[in-house]
Image 1 (cartoon, rainbow, N blue to C red):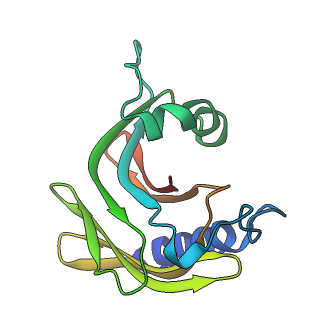
Image 2: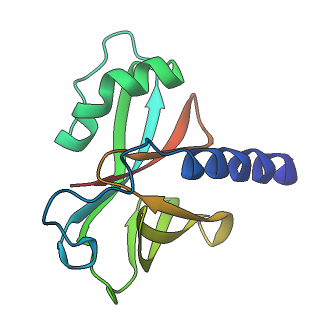
Length: 160
């Protein structure tokens, strides 16, 4: 069961981290990706279906609410762990932590496509997923995680 879950998570992460819009690697006029001081919001989100869904918060999640509903088929999204950090070369690792899950983000530098990071998802102390991804200001990264109760864990990273 763990192997199937790991294979599914790895496949989803690779698919989502390699697909980027055509404009993903093009910095805005006058922008220097390595020195921009952009912030990254990382969140652990549980998606469920509720009879009376509550509005999505924080604003990073609110902006993605319609896309998440269409993509995953759930109508309520609850943030169970989050972190907001500046993306800088040499920036230290950070965590988005909940009671049972933690998302470890390790910045690896800037490429022409965006910000390279290594992601590790843990359940308690067991690693469920490790992948490299590229974050872009034009496209949030969403990874479908394991089933959690009656819902689904989602990993979100949004460059601001």
